[in-house]
Length: 280
Image (cartoon, rainbow, N blue to C red):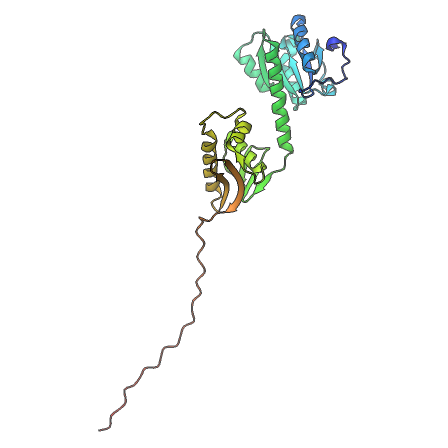
């Protein structure tokens, strides 16, 4: 095994830079020119990183406590597919990005199905590679955070972050990914009114354009699904000119069940009247 870190930094000493989350990355590659350019960018980001020139046992990779690993399959030789599969299976929490030479569609599909999170073809720009690594780690951190969250119960609805779904009486409301992100955001606000602009920024990920009605459209779709699954409750309330609030409240539109009818006791029939008899 060959192992080194850029700029002589000791492998186990964490690096940090303002505005960057701490990251540990290993690069399994032997392209000296590419590694030199990549190393400079990693240094600027303050990421702790290691360069590995040959495949190492998965136990060694586990001991490194990495967030992600970048792999050039050409370095692995004939054992490339077996090693990739074993690496992904042994470290399900590790982000794996393949960065290798020209490949066929079948090869890329095979690598992704074996467990790689992303595939980038050389030559490529180091900035794109690092952006893909960041994206992979970000997705995995979000998934781990979701798995740790407790379900949210509101009215008849149970919101399960680990499944990206909401349930009523154990049956899925059948939400799309964006609809789930919307209900999760609204429910987490715990009754606070969220402005449309804030909803758009946090669900769509960028600033809302003037006149964009996407929030209203998705709220309407979500509200319809919730009312169909749980008709006796109203969950999303509109604050006109402001935004929306999530609070389960019994619906006023539900027709009440009829009161049970109690039969009145039978009254005895009145005795027949007899005409008086006239004596001649």
